Picture 1 (tube, rainbow over the protein chains, first blue to last red):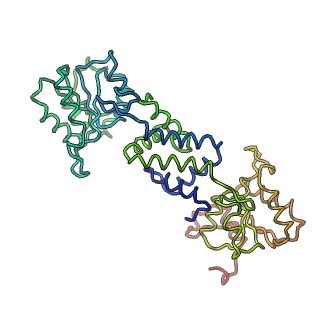
Picture 2 (picture 1 turned 135 degrees about the vertical axis):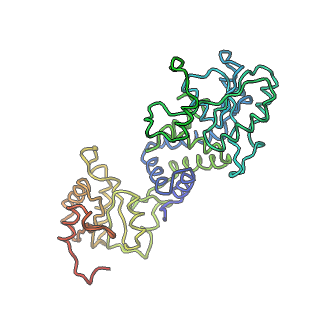
Picture 3 (picture 1 turned 90 degrees about the vertical axis):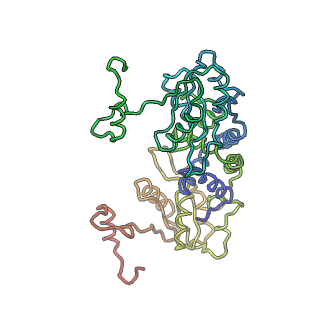
Length: 203
Length: 203
């Protein structure tokens, strides 16, 4: 498509570089911005630049942070004995939203995936070892995705660290709250029968 | 949702101000940007700022333009005798893509819509009058949307300018190329029967 203006063409090109946004949506967004007060576009542009230049990662857990050590890692209210290993920053936010976990996190930054060329060396595995060597840890929770790559990653970490004196656990898999049994997939249903819980322990 | 970093929270807030993008998509886009080379985010931010600050509008037709008069208006190859009136810049691009029109455009900047509080005074109607007074115009084409507001706008313009010595026309309405008759809506089908064309004139 021919754009009547070079600044518009450039903006459309850059916006359509985002995932899930094609040229048509990018044009729609650009035209929307042009209809708003100029300040909105400037603020958006500034905050995107700031995002990529100013974002910091916590040195301990590799979560995003405004400080060198993130709020969760530096909080005295949270247990140093439990470490929850997740793939991604989004997973930290998702678990934090449940308010059911009071330990610390470690963001791996991905999962082992030979198909995508991601090996253990690209993940933040050294930080787990550092945590283990500090000696406070009692339990490591694998909160990884329920896929082959997630399972491989958990298994790799378990093999690597099984000689340390810690308990390993994995988040429960089973049918989701609200699911109808007849529509649940067989593997999840099978697992939820195998890992059944005493009735009074549930909440 | 609690974000682990203020720059991230700010970016998510600004991105989710765009139409059709909620907080979750905004977060996904922000995290995508953080995974890319820093330069991509900076370029995107810069081009958005440039878009809203540097965009110019053609003084003649109100299309976007990098110059004071846009390429279409200043082109000697295009006829000054036909003026195509559209609502929006996107419509110019759409018609240009057909390569079937060789006149000039006029971007109204909207359509008369009492529901949305848009009256004739907010549209670029003065520029049509200016064009008419120049005396080159032979035909005005209404290429407005096939809605009540589009029809109202066309009727208003027709009433206002009908004393000038020009022909008025409206783009054809009928069934779209590729449509099956049984699925076409009645109004379009009815119009396409009323406005039937001699068989040899079609291409």
